Length: 71
Image (cartoon, rainbow, N blue to C red; front, side, top):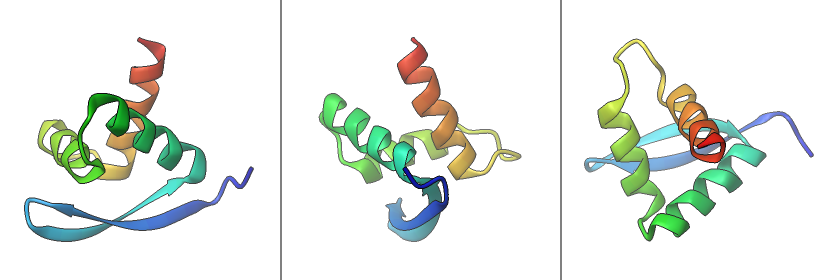
């Protein structure tokens, strides 16, 4: 398992952005999106809209993933 973040591009509300997450978080994030029946970009946009302006998108995704699996 590699602990280094991997950068991927996402499209949020028509704009491309890059997010760096560790492989384990990318896998979990994709699994959650598939479980919910939504595209990964749609789930990222939902998280982006709900996050505090002081919180980075990558951090918000990590917290979302952790919260999902803890709940």
